[in-house]
Image 1: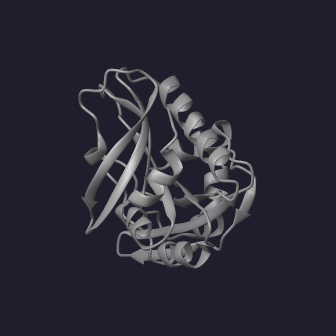
Image 2: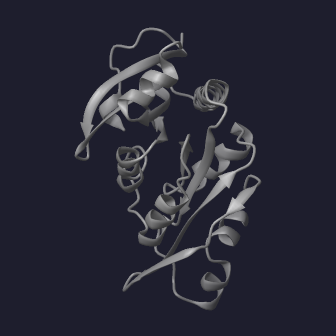
Image 3: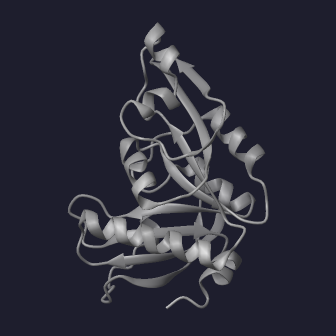
Amino acid sequence: MHTFLVPNLSVENSMVTLPPVSVLGCVLAGAGILGRIHDTGRIEASLKTMLSHLRSTRSDVRHWLMAGHDAWQPQNRIVTYNRLWRSLSKRVQLPPGLWSEEYSITSDRGIKFFGFMEIQDPTVASILPVLGSERDCTLVASWGVDPTDELTSIAKKGWEPPHLGPPKEIVQAACRMDIGVYSRVGDFDAVIAGTAFIARPRWIDALFSDAD
């Protein structure tokens, strides 16, 4: 979410609270681990720190991978056989977890498949390759609620590939329930890069009020 960038950030690899803003018709806030120089290592380190912080702060936190095809696929026997999970696993190793059903969206341009999985043991090594494989792959965290019905509803309808940040359809879910959305900040020659976590303001306060 480029709305949350901090243009004058001067401290490297620090946890910063990002102020509430109006996003897609609701108010969300965020926290980020950001630095001024972009490199792959910074993205990896910031995601690792964010994962560790959430898991240590909330014992009931659960992590979910929202996944889908960002490009339309031809409607042929190979594509309909591979569907989503098999097609992704041909390119990257999927993390251990419980996979949802694969939902198809069709148009005159072809077919796409969407779904989600609850990741059993989220680590950067298992998650980052998947997030990099498709723009339509997004990491989500939940706490205190079971988001399965909400995530199923989103996956059945699919979502549009984002230009920056997570898909708006997934961000909007954070307006409706207690889930948070991970967002990579910075790309290519960006000055600022890292990982942000977006959720309702009260949950950002609860999760990050004691962060350094």
